[in-house]
Image (cartoon, rainbow, N blue to C red; front, top):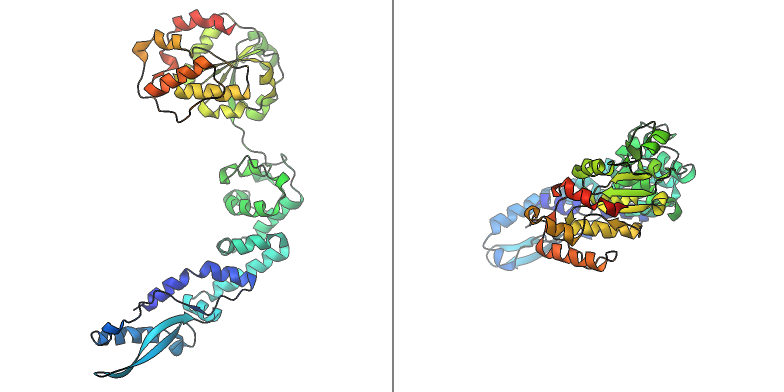
Length: 397
């Protein structure tokens, strides 16, 4: 038979729905418990003493003895050997007061009601959200004035791109919003119009981007291969790390760009490209599929672009990705001739790509992709001797 502890455990599972119906006004009680493990007829005589002890324990914790709590429902049967006896046939909790008494949550429930009233009084648009997220209301007790102040600011005053998250003009500790980004994101999604939310960004880590805050920009490494440009624009500095937004705003006569996949090989190619200098040329360090950061750079649309990555299936997959952003992109040292020139440097442990047809590869590149992927081959950039690179440099124009 169910124990008093098990009754409490089962009643615990009702808590979210109890909170929800508190807000909607729907009737939740009375409610019967299931799985009470009722006494079976063939047990009654065989285990009478144990059954009686279990029933007495349930009775001691019931509403009959304590004014509040669970209610026991009985059935009576007459037995030849032990006479007329009653057995528990059901257990119910009849009122909200009984339920809160049983779980010892009267104070918690009163706080929940007060917090929900505050939310709806300050921001009525959160009514549906409150009904869907009652546990969030409970969990954030003690923080609701600050949370509502923040949401109201985003609704009425916030303008995209003006502030970092720690400099919003709110009388709050500087880390408050960062600490509560998850709950704030849920609420802002519920009240802000679609044009105030950037659906390209999701999750706590992209809170700033999603709601139009300034944020720490990814850094792009740029190597100027034209000493004249370096002197004119950067006092002779030719190896720079620039925030992405500033990188997108560059206005200088760069006609040719070489994008590299592998940081290890960055200096090798740069050494080669600076012998001699190349007018109007720059190198960009890419980081695998992070090349997506470069997809909306207007000035790159006007430049000749070369891509040099590891010669494996994933390298060609990234080439296809980059060419999707900039159709003029050409590959450098990513062909069958380069692969066949260095069989001694082939690795056979390359990860297998799940991609099939890559839409932005040429016919020869697609055939090479299939060959590399099938055989899990890789030729890493740094394996290619500089002398070979120099013989192919004319391909860069």
